[in-house]
Structures are given as structure tokens and as C-alpha cells.
Length: 133
Image 1 (tube, rainbow, N blue to C red):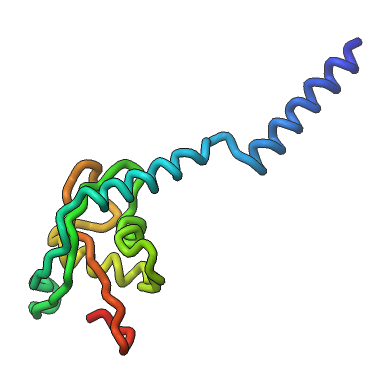
Image 2: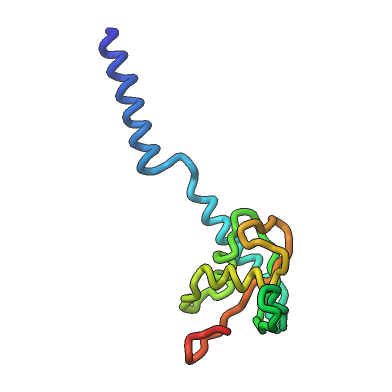
């Protein structure tokens, strides 16, 4: 009886570890809800505004169109910008998005955005030469 009990416990442990490593225990629906929130936020934000913001590092003027968005839980700068360009072939590099975001939002680090705050997110238009600036 004892060997059978030990065998069952070992099998439950092996199956549990296998399931955890392959499927995981964190529900994937949180990612779906984050994407839905992004779309809702994008739909409910202000219209695209043109701006001319000062680049603090170079002292020059940069001109980037932007849209103000209220950040929800689980959203990232790159994810929000990508959602703003939904339906388009979005090929802007993540480091470029982060640099432009930080230029539009002075004294804000892209990796430290806060939920519920309003930030300016860059809008990229397709240009024939492929350069956005």
C-alpha cells in the first residue's frame, strides 16, 4: 500500500510540474483584457494634436505629432503606440518609440509610467523616405 501511495504522489508532482512548465498557472486572459483596455483608451482619448517640443539633450526643436492617452494597468509605452497605429504596418523600432516618448514627456522615464496618468504618445505617419523625423 505504501509504494502505491508514494507512486501516486510522485506522479501528481510530475504532472503538476509538467503542466506548470508547459501551460503555466497565470491566466492568459490578463493580456487580452490589457489589449481591450488599450483599444478603449485609444478610442476615448483626445484627437491627435501637433506639437513642437524642446529636446532637452540637444537644445533643438523636435516636431512630433502626439496623442494623449490615460495609461491603464499592464500597458507599456510601445504597446500603446502600437495600438494607436492599429491596422497599419507598424515598423518603428522600440528604442525609437521610447526616445520619442521621453522627448514628448519631459522628466518621465518610459519604463516608469504610472497607471491613471495622462502621457503624450508619439504618432508616426508613413513617409516615402521611411524616416519619421
